[in-house]
Length: 340
Image (cartoon, rainbow, N blue to C red):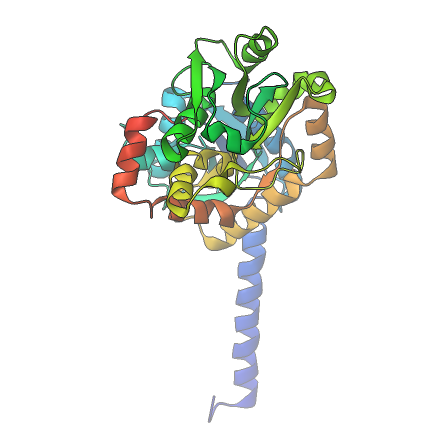
């Protein structure tokens, strides 16, 4: 500031510092005496809703100003209405966030009707849970290793189209030429496990958490994990091989698209254009809340998976999905039209 009197220069610098401090103070106090709405795209009692309520209970503790967090369920169209509301109508000041379906990005790419939200413009805050999926077989199954399913028929139970018990073997057969044969019509994974014990089927492919009630069968060897359907390591089953180890690059890309929902967990998002400082604040608060020892203890009592899914991973995942070749997207649309 050449030519400026020393006293005036100091005053300007001091005023600038005060403005910066005031801005920082205002940002950190933004949520004081405010209320945050968490729009849950599923009905009360659903696992998304249970996880959202658990997060909402502990989140205020980790946000400066400790705002109240209230849940508003908006379950219409399996979370699509909630996603459209967050994208089009919700205030963009950080006071409203959405607990949305893990399938939003893949469904948008597949062109499911009525989706107005652009997953690339939503601000991903992070997610909870890693519902890693596995294929489980009985001790009497005709296959012993992953390699066997490429040459030997394996009969597995299925709930029906649109469910992971159907999607997993369908995609494996198409992408990898495995020999799964599905028997459909079961009510759920527990019913299929009973069918395995009755020797109606040899196995089932489903979320690992669905087998919590079968610990004794795994301990005695009546059931065993043949492989995990995820690239991500699953510490609960450290010795289980990944099906991705048996896939070429193009096959991996196909499966990554079809199975991307697992990597999202139960995701949370801000609408576009929320100020970056509030985005950073909320991301930090959510991670701290999920790793809060009290939340972990309470979730453990409920057998509720609250494993943290980092926001940068969700953002990267969306970007990767939108790089999928159109012809591959079209193939997946025909093969599994209603990804769950």
